Length: 366
Image (cartoon, rainbow, N blue to C red; front, side, top):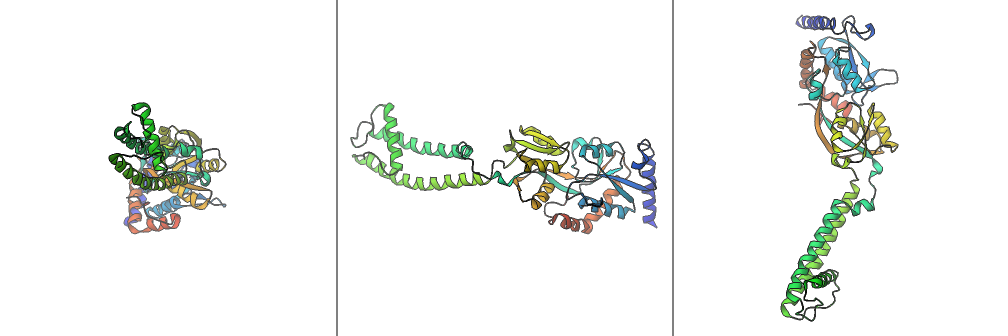
């Protein structure tokens, strides 16, 4: 009896609210006979469109569970773009919107959101063939510059020591007394010593002891330095050219128009190419039109698992939450929040995550 009264109250509140902002919209887009028309957009795996026109996905199943708990009759209206979906909800054309909608301060200023229904973030997707050897890029990479800097330091410091103790004083070392060109003589001798074939050898005792220490230290350093440089350069090459948002400067990056990824990537000096949906972004990556795609992590992960020609570059960044959208002042928001929390606490939410994503780790909103 109490549940029936609660459902009746929700329908009355919704009907009263619909009479205002929904009065001017076409009859086919209004909630009629107690039916709520939910705005959505195809974003796999949250919303999928089957060949017969039926919708499936994590967000669809979650809303159906909420509607069942509240005793609401609903149907879905699909929009082609995110801005169109958000505008339909903001103006009251649709009383609810659910898909993969990120909660942001800008959006929250003009519409209402439910409790977070999913914890997400942004990721970068690149082609699998991005991992190739770029000789020119490798030679001017940060790793190579660090390697060359250390090598120069290791040679120049001993060179000054040998110039100081042997300049014009030891006939066994070809090091002239003036700093120029004496320091060049010492540098050349130290470099030759590291290779194991120096021209000349100190005759005096102290320079000979120092030279012996340097020769053995040089051999050990060359072995360690070679291993370090080879490993660093190999890893740098295997990781590809794009490993995070800081690597996107000057790159052609596809984003979904109106998405949080489009807003965020604008600050990294990337050459942004906007598309209406993620499918178009992925297609532009595969045909070589763009260098990378930046979009929501779960969507990219789902696509990368199915499409072997792409991989995820680096780690997810810019954490964000998905929510269910409502017009400001909607009477549905609180009942939907309560139903959503009950579904999460009952374990039904985790079941949906496993069904559609295969793993609940790091996905459940908290």
